[in-house]
Figure 1 (cartoon, rainbow, N blue to C red):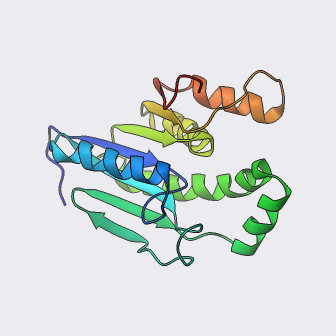
Figure 2: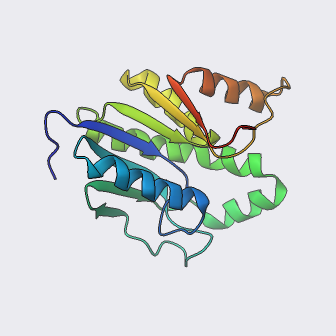
Length: 177
C-alpha cells in the first residue's frame, strides 16, 4: 500500500501485539485503527510473535491489517526466554532487547523514508526506540504501560531514564505512572 505525500508514517515498537490477548494489545489495535482511519497516518508495527495466549508463532510474520502493517518477529531460543523469566523479568528483557532492536532496525531501514516518528510501547521498546531515534534522526514518543520506579541508581534505572529522556513526548496511561 502506498502512502500519500501528506501522511505521516509511524513506527510502533511493542514486544506484544494482536492476536496476543491483553490490555496493551487491545490498546495498540485501537490506536492503529484510529490513526489510520483518517488517512493522515500510515502505521508500521514491530512486535514479537504471540507467546502467552496463543500457540507459539501462529500469527503471520507480516500482516496487512487495513492501512497498517504488522511485522512479527519469531522468538529466538524460546526455551531460554522461559527459563530467564523464571529467574527475573529484567533478565528476560535484557535477553530479548538486542534481538528486538536488530529486527526493528532492519524494518526501519526498509521504511525510513516513509516513517516520520517512532512510538515505543514500554521500557524495552523505549530503549530500542531511543537508539533507533538517534540513528535515524526520528522523533521518539514513549508510552508507559506500567509503573516504573526510577528513583534508584542501578544500571537498569539509569538506562530507563536515558531512554525516557530521549523522548519528544511521554504518554502515561495512568496518573501514577
